[in-house]
Length: 475
Ligand SMILES: O=C(O)[C@@H](CO)O[C@H]1O[C@H](CO)[C@@H](O)[C@H](O)[C@H]1O
Image 1: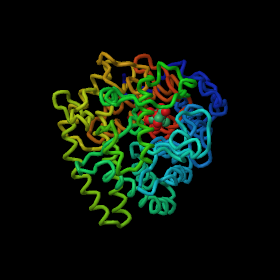
Image 2: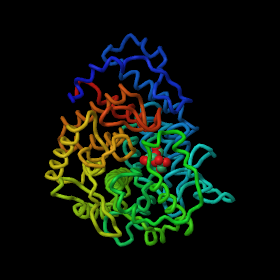
Image 3: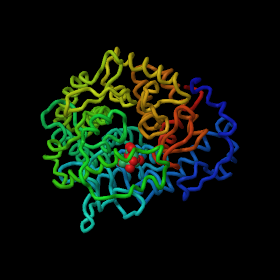
Image 4: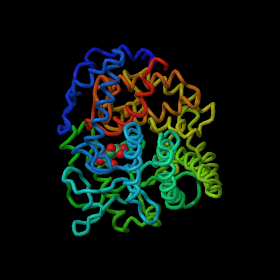
């Protein structure tokens, strides 16, 4: 794949007018109103990018539910935690006030103990399972889930604060959100690292955000399936089953929910009773980076004691990250806390220590070499799982497909370590996927085909916040 400078030669089919059928979540084709092609001032070469930006804006607007953004119609009808933090980056390019509001809505659901839930059920919806009545009960449905997701929010707050045009608004909102972010990050330290190892535990595959990652095969297999009430999956009514987790995984996902519900999601108990407890690379890398950004905000806001407290977390985590590095494989790996073993699967989360800035120069060089090898194996990267592995599945969710949000994080990391060409290569791949195949949840790295939910919010946000800046001849 050529660097981004070559992006101006976009495949002809990608330039065809597409239709925007916002109500048809299953439609891969999108229509962009003709109006967007009428701006005479824009160089022809940039038409595809301009179309993508217009479509991205329409997707966020269509998925806006009044202050929060659903990931995709039908498939995901509520507010998701890390989705919203990433989507806010997209909103910031359109309306800074709306970007801050996205985070405010998310934090309005924060629990007293500091947890920021993985889903907020603002309004009822019949199209998703498991909904509020499973997390709570039919008699007393819960307003949120009782688990969390990778803590992207502090990273977003720093970006909005630093890059926002409305400085007064940014100062006010950052001040309001800071104590809430801090409470969540403290919750991670206590509820998820009670022994003070420096790395936090993830207790449910849904918390990792990479639900059916091959890294979870072994630890999830060790979760016994309880006699849970019969249930009907709704995801399979929206997306082909070949693109989704399997039934045996769902049975265990649900078993964990019922076990957690039985103790009322008490965060002082869950760590000790969960039959699934892993050190997830994605959560820990995102948390590490978010702590660096929270520390930066603390200094900006004159909270020096808090900055010192965060320094303590970061220092400990820095040392502990080395225990996740497999030098022979040239990759970081997640760990099963219950067996103490590193998990063999090489996944795209293994590159996220670059995003965290926790890898050494030598480790970064190995990661870059591994990534290059992966990219050479596929048409478009980054695959979410080692494309040379025997059980690589290019269509199935987190077991092979490309995710734009992960590409953004890894690209950011590659740049920080000086791998500019490789960063450009990933950007070029991502851009081409979106231009040629629309704005979807994920993409098949072998064919480039779009997969999962269509008209997807965080992919649209990545287009607005990242690719719009990257896809220029300057790269
Ligand atoms: O499949 C599901 O039902 C949900 C469960 O949380 O998970 C998927 O969708 C979420 C919303 O986009 C993302 O936040 C996750 O990362 C992704 O794995």
